[in-house]
Length: 177
Image (cartoon, rainbow, N blue to C red; front, side, top):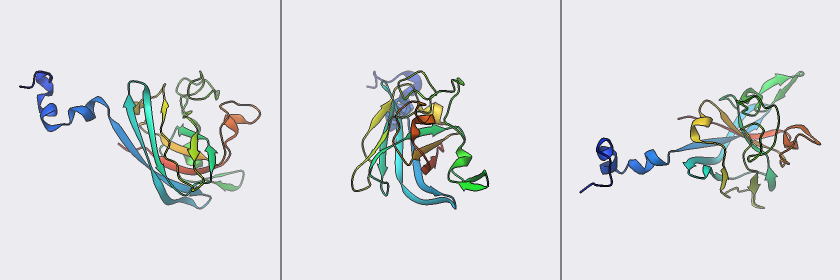
């Protein structure tokens, strides 16, 4: 009757949970950030392991139109911190996730740090719903991290501005699972 289920996985197969175990996902709640700290919820981003890489499905609102830098950051915090005497939004998230210590920004398909996600596209009405895939990442890379949206676009390079030139941190979510 359950020939497609492995003996050890029959219980999962019977409950329908096997599909979830094959393609796990995590939903990250995103918040506005400011020099006052973590603000209102602007939506969610679902990350799901696939055979092509980490599928990214945003469902966001309240952002400025255009392209935005989108990254995995090293720490699980969206809090502001002081730098040079000023409160900096989302600074507690640290830098871009770079487990191999490459020290360079080369885009989601390049040979730089792993924190580079495909650019986030925001429609004229302030919503972001376009799916993308980060081929070099999987859900396990997100554990103990945060996800950041920057004010401007991302050229996937360290020139002419470092880290893609995305600018300030406008929204953030802590990965919890």
